[in-house]
Amino acid sequence: MTTPSRFVVKTSQAKCPGKWQHPRVSVAVIETTDGLIPYEISTRPLNVVRVVAVWRAQYSGSTERCQASRALAEANRIAERYNERDAVPAVPAFARLLAA
Image 1 (cartoon, one colour):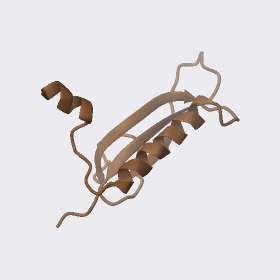
Image 2 (cartoon, one colour):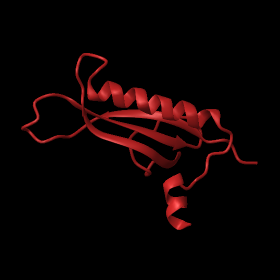
Image 3 (tube, helix red, strand yellow):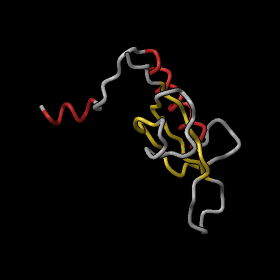
């Protein structure tokens, strides 16, 4: 019997060129085998099955309207929706449509 996968939201500070003077954040929805948050946004950690969605270098402001807050809210919605389901297809829907 396999354990159900869990979808978690991971944030990390983005590495940006020097001309960007404001802080930037990367946000990702990651499918893990045990529900623990991995140490990086990648498929390298052992508990990571796949990276579902990534928002790279989003501006991190002080309000809820900044890019990072909006990306984090969307990532939380995606993770909640996937965690509610019992079985999530391993292949994204758009890839199945392209194959048909």
